[in-house]
Length: 245
Image (cartoon, rainbow, N blue to C red; front, top):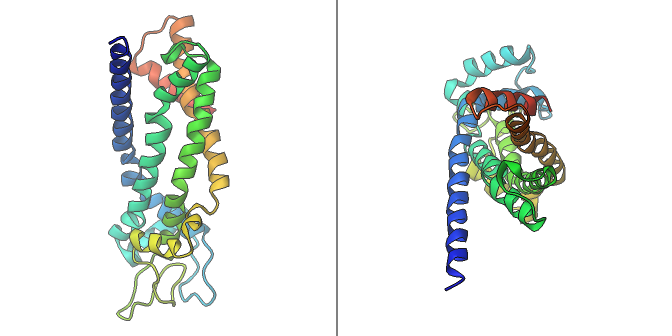
């Protein structure tokens, strides 16, 4: 009987964590849905054409290349190429990095016999950022790899399935979307999905530590030392500080 309150509290925390992860994943979909087209252009700008590429070099800057893709391949291709992988990446990263942050922060603070919520110690907050940054970076690696592969091969095809635009123009299309790309990468073994994950993990740790804990602690300091109330203006100000970091 004495363990019932502990169990009930643990279940309540678990339910709250699941809801927070779910909410953050839903919110995360807005990023690729509105900005995936910028990744398509960036990949076309940074990618190296294959030997014998029959398409003219992609020059003219961001807007020029965007207009060219729009004219040659259409608005749907510009907006949707690699979309499924982009959605998977953002949902995984944001769900882990932001949705799971309160639970991990409080767990680390509890282990250190500290407080929970915004009053948790700075060490617990940064430690949570490191842990979740590493996890989100690792989980995002397969989606990053596939998204880049899909967007790098993107282009219009002729009736025989040969690409006529893009970085691989003049060669047969090998990938037919995100699912096809996953199958191709997995054909080299499961570990192939995590190629380059080390760099991804380091980058993710730096981004996570520099955003979520900084944002939260900025709000905490502003409320405790400056007497500011929890308002949209405070959230915006803390977000600006985190963005600068």
